[in-house]
Length: 377
Image (cartoon, rainbow, N blue to C red; front, side, top):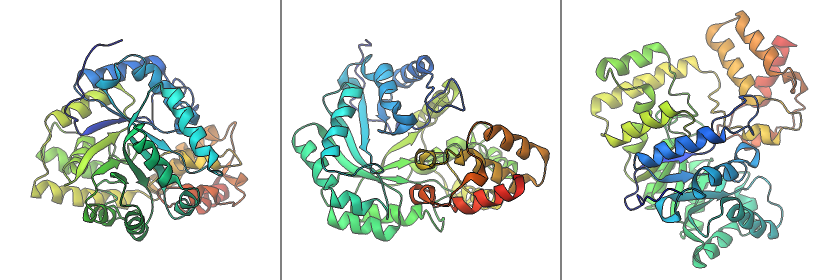
């Protein structure tokens, strides 16, 4: 066990576990445990200590992986741990205690620093209210098993306001915020941010690099950034945008390579606010990127968890974007054939729209799959 104590001053960069390193990129359960432990060590060595996980991440394997990499190897006081109560599979009040107990067992901890209700939106909030999930997590706080409570949110600004009016007891709100979604007609990051701040709630940022999408942007947009800051990557610009917002206490990043950990910690070690010129560059970059992306999927894989046809939806959406961006070339067809070799095809979609109900980006997935089916058969 590592005997270090670095927890005192919480730095703004958090280690998210939605996208852990994999031994097999086609198997989301094949977590590379040895590499993950080395990434955790590098992150902690750099003076960072916030880790966030979720019950269903990596086909319910992320919590166990984080236990092996973190909680079994470091003293509890040396790290900050956040977990979430899932909402996609709740059907009885009894399940709340069952899931919470299982999370404690998986992670082998006696308390959570942050405990959130996961992925609230128009389709999930009524169920959370019906089952008393807010009351449940508040009781856990009163029992000393949770230090701070809140919820992660993927919904409309109006619903966010409704929740915060009904539940002033929450300590934090976790929002999807990045410069591409800031004015997005569906995500509405700016409006959600303004509402949360209007209620005085500290904000945890998720998807600051939009699932890696803002790390690999069109050359025209990257050139604008490199001209002003030649040594800074597009990802660092995205992280600085999120971290510089008033009231943001944590920015989560799903790091799965040593290079990503080192680059991100360097960015936060030397964190500076965006200048007016830099803000203007990001606005122009967003316009350029939006011209090139047909469906802004973040590959969160929530859709895969609920698809009865086992369709690799995020992979197929990326192929859809390649077709829209690069035209009718051969490589999208090759990628498609590989993606559906032993999984569901686009044409297998039964239009149940379970994926659209859970999609944080509110994408028209059925329509996209239908277009792919028409193109590829």
